[in-house]
Length: 145
Image: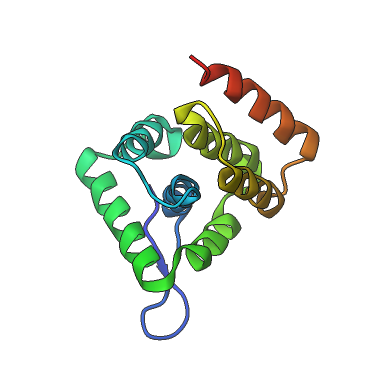
């Protein structure tokens, strides 16, 4: 897992790709107003299974999660979301979109706020509209049961 790097004045840091994925998932879970305990568990489950995090320990992931949450508290979810989108490698944009949508659909449906966030996320990540639609369709079926 990558470390963060210094960038800018007074200790401002750029998110690492690992932090960016976590921030994106947290922002997605918060899109309906709150991160439920189920969503927090889902984030840990998703992250621990990603190739990007395979060599990390639970303690390392916990530290990373805490740092991202602290950053969101200090800078706001919108700011951290925009930074996270910039740090997601382009070749993983569709993957990031799919993971975020899967998390939002873990309760079986997208609320109006989540639907709006899904479109914002699609645009921010540069995911093709048709591909995004197919991803949402498949994940809707996956989470229906």
